[in-house]
Length: 201
Image (cartoon, rainbow, N blue to C red; front, side, top):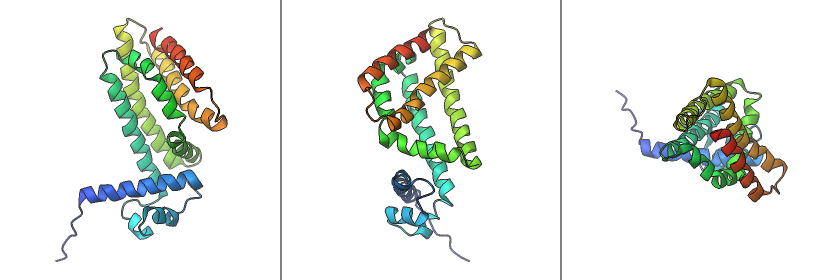
């Protein structure tokens, strides 16, 4: 009888993270299609065959990045939910949110995934599912926050406000790409004005 090889979960998680960190570097430098598995394996310091023990393909690597982002966004929303006034917490955190979204370390990889989603139905479906999950939690936060203030929470209002807030932050990534000289202090002030209008009216 063949003895099954014991796999240390902690070591496996570390190796997966090693591959993802290497892939992120390669995707930022060469793009999703320009980065080969051999390039990723070299950056990760392991053989291409070893990488396939953790990820079956580049699509699987992108899927892992999508899930990483879901976890990041869910953590952010959870932190906001824990505040005494979640809507005000969103406004108070504007400077951090704006600066994070214009940081190339933040937007370079998401833009690669957005581009791949536009031509790859598998990645598009993963991204849309991820968006549905994070959007549902943000919508619940927005509804609860507005109810505390006695503000409208009908579907049209909630969905319109939610999508506009999301669009404001996602749009920062393209603006940072097209205009590296963004007037950041003025934009932070403008974001506060816009968010107060969207969240509290």
